[in-house]
Image 1 (cartoon, one colour):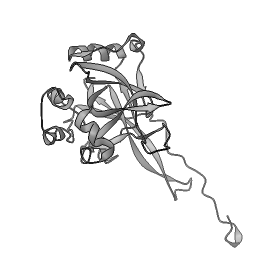
Image 2: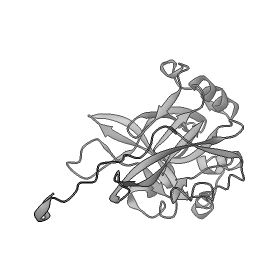
Image 3: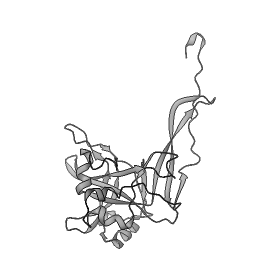
Image 4: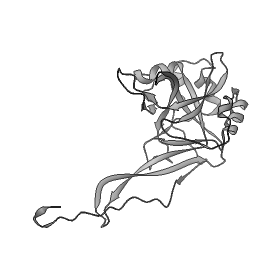
Length: 239
């Protein structure tokens, strides 16, 4: 599942794209042009409906916290499976009432690669190779997310999780899940601007066939799996 993403080439482009689709821009503190790379616990800019029904772009932290008594503020949930998002108590209220959109320029998927000792013997361990995916025409990709407001260090903080679906043909060779993508025509229903029954909303969460429109490349080709030395048994069976 996605563990990292970038938001456009710059936040200024996110603002421009959001305004073109009817979303008001964030505050001036978010107006720098640096590339935004988000991982769990970091902020990302999310498009949601404001109280007055207009689209707005809001900074939110990636990850729902654990709501059990005594739990800490560290995020526990990063992803919600599309198949069960309307049934699990952790996500069902957010699916029903707080759906939003995350625009990204690229996203990462991890491939679990077996680690072998230097003599070629399997070690039984795994190493994660990172793959980066983006649209060949550099168009932004829209993730379906749900959000809630958590209490973090005694302060309210909007948080989000990504919705996931089974992987498409491009991603399936490296992992079995991928983000749920939304076509622009589906935004109004997903955000709640266009009334729809819950099954109709859930039907938008389908595996996206990129039809060759995406490219997938190894994030760092020079980075290879480790080759630890195979410990040789000593006489008497000791290592």
